[in-house]
Length: 283
Image (cartoon, rainbow, N blue to C red):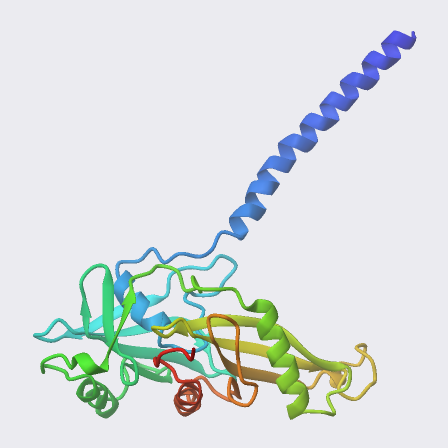
């Protein structure tokens, strides 16, 4: 009787274990799949590389339950190998405006792409009838990028072609949180409980390893009413941050607020100048 009871218990445990194992493995594989970094699988990895390095705030993919490839469409090429193209990942500006981008790639050799970092991008609100920007803006973009003229090497930036928009240089997540919270609390000393860093997106890096990041934070319990009061969570903050490869920084210059991806050029130009972008690192 005891033997039969033990045998039945053992069989029950084996059956339960088999069920859990059978359900657990697929579930484990599913969660592992969710955390596999997104990789671009489209036809234009060279154009993708130009876009994600010059569209501040972009994800590098169309965000959905399952991320998928952004829409890249070639508009025109010139006699020197340049490519004029649009890039669309359904990105919203900070005020909710749908944004589209147009870029000029100078050259591609299959391993590296070249572009004019200061002049290659045109970000604009999504048009109703066409993906391309107004003709006058398109003409100005082409002129800034030496369209149908010899390449200006002095203006060129080179990047290795990639299918992933992520930092391969360093991981500064903890540092970004500290810098963001410190700066935001100086900016808004009345922020209640505290300003909370939420996440960051790597944007691009210069030739010496400095990294440009987009950072998002929010102010919680601004009025001290507790988190149960939705009205107490009232402020959202967006920043651009530049970090040196060794993590060194100057709080007076390394971070600036961003109010719009569409209008971020002037902010990023100032931030890069203040942080010696593309200049040799200090000893």
